[in-house]
Image (cartoon, rainbow, N blue to C red; front, top):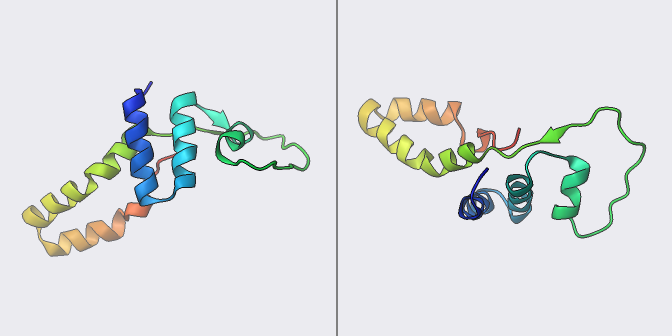
Length: 106
């Protein structure tokens, strides 16, 4: 379980990189644990949402706190790669591990 300060840090990191909406969803998942989409919606959307027929498959979502913290450390990692391996490796790393490619929710 993540502490309240950890949840606030993760929410800030997500908000600054993505959006307030993504931040609300991650904060909800970190504080409540694994949830279905139907359980997440009341935390993140203020308006009424109508669904059609219920799906037979239920997907559950979990926020990955460690990956959110890795996102904060990524610039330092990029600096070390640049200093020790050079600009060519840094460019390759940027292509392979695009900042938007971090998986924050599973």
